[in-house]
Length: 198
View 1: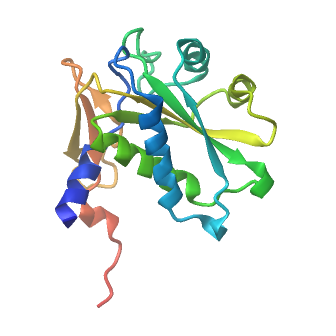
View 2 (view 1 turned 180 degrees about the vertical axis):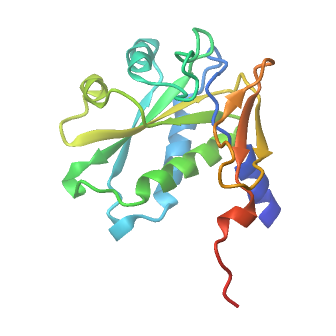
């Protein structure tokens, strides 16, 4: 693989919040995506994260109202019927191995979203949800605590990256234009590197 192949994949791995809900994703495909986490680094090599795959209509209807969507869009309650996720992958911490998964959660979520993109599927990593009610709905046992919800589906919106101007007070909030395009400002490399010691 060339460096630019990875860069282009990462640039295409955008958060999507509106999906083609009717386009089914087989459980086998979602399982293949979850399998990628086996190859991620793990703090202490404890590998404490587990996953619940939700694809049934009944279970999706139970999960959806427990989620909060796009905090910067105060007048938007989330995707309408027909634009909701085709599935959810819910990341849970197995507390048998401790109450801290260190950096594992982010590494594994990124691995899955990158895997989804190679299949033409998109995701939305959600941290804002009713964790108590979601835990009750999952029915997986007390020791498995939900950490993140990955909403999954074929994208029904266009997402564009744009460069921020590099000033410290530049606006970093994502936004939508009237044509429905979702814009995501990104800081320039010059702002990310504090110092280079030669």
